[in-house]
Image (tube, rainbow, N blue to C red; front, side, top):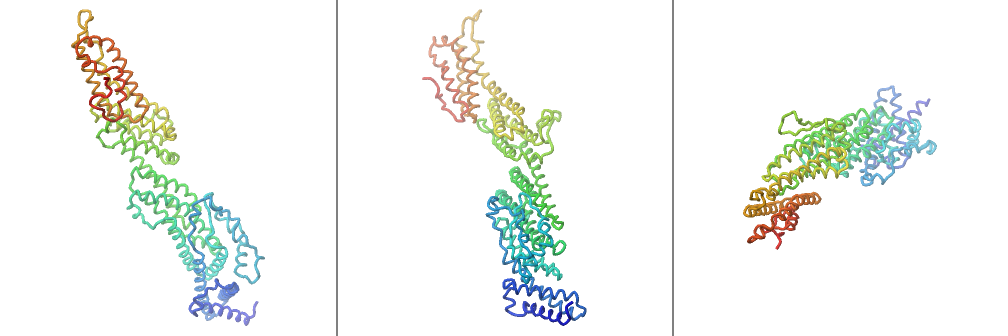
Length: 614
């Protein structure tokens, strides 16, 4: 045991060392930093602090205890200032450009290159208290215990935020502050400096300080851009920024007191983490509309992908609220997606426009709905997990004229998502059928339904995901519908025209061997007038699909041309033997073939038929 006189001398030297660096003692003490100077001075100061702390444990006289307390307070104020200075000197925002590119740097989360693990006790001279002590601490806990508490997922990529030399200094300062009862001051200084660094990284990543109310007041077009930026930034924040902050806290504070590293980590990142999540929360509870679905699904996918990493990075009990908030936001995003899909279905069913689209072409609603569900199908894997219930539909027994029928028995084995897609097509057709009734011309109404159902089929076949969910059997059923609409068009258009080409009513005499020329002339005049009208109107109708347009022209020719050719063959001579035959036989077979080529182009023709033979 050291003699009392030697102990007193040691304490006197220690006290002088501490007082020489008293921040209130001199200009030099205020302007210079111990840890910026010679390492021998660092060691002397740390030894002085240790001596005073040991003396406090053994002091028996109240005056000695009070004096030691006073000196320790001066030392702690100094160390707190040194701690802050080291942190500030080595604090800068993460270089986000390289971190956004996963291929630009090597994953550092394996931790086998740990700055502590690389050090051995014998590498340092005996009087190098600071560095030798750090290595001994690392050996005592063992590399695995010091580093293995937090193992990274495949996606987490930790980086060194502060150089190893600075970490050693911060750790030995923190150890002395905590042992002297200055944990709260140490945590506050650490948290304030590192939180400022996190804020700087946030600014570089484009994460703005927006409250939930601020987010909800922004136009959706603006938010779409911010959502894209948030998704990229959130990955960097969780997997790099927050993970690296956690690693830094562990390197500095682990083993220096129960939960110390967790307290410092919480002080550093809880505010930034809440700020990050508040944006996603604001989107999850914002007003729903169909145009928001895709970005909400993007957010959902991004957060779902990040959630395992959130659970790892924020695994401590003190940060449970972050894990809970992230999980709740994910749940609300899922509910928002389900709600939007339901509202979209209702909007399709109730879409109120009644003005017929010119020419019976594809209705804007049809294009919008099919493009929309095509885009939805890109999120098939996500939506299969989210959409777990069948759509609310009518049935043939419901008797509700405002809702179409859909029998699930015919669609056994389909996922709820597939049933929702089919239901959307069912209600779209139901709405289109109602719109078709606003056409005054029945032929045009059938053409309108043919065009639109054909478009539904083609868009469904054009997307492998959509086609798989809807199924070929249902697509065959839809194909049959537009084929039936085409047949209905043919009947509505040509039955009256072909009725003019019948023989009934033209023969006279007991054996019907004679022909009534007046009846025949009237028949030709009626036919000509009908052809003129059909040509004039149906040239302005439109079939956008080239193949479908050609098919309907061919089928129209197959109905009209043979019948007209046969009629001419039987009765031409009766007209040509009289006066002004061209008045009655206005068109040749070739004229009619040419006329049909004008059909469904969507543009008017001259009042005097361009296709008439001269």
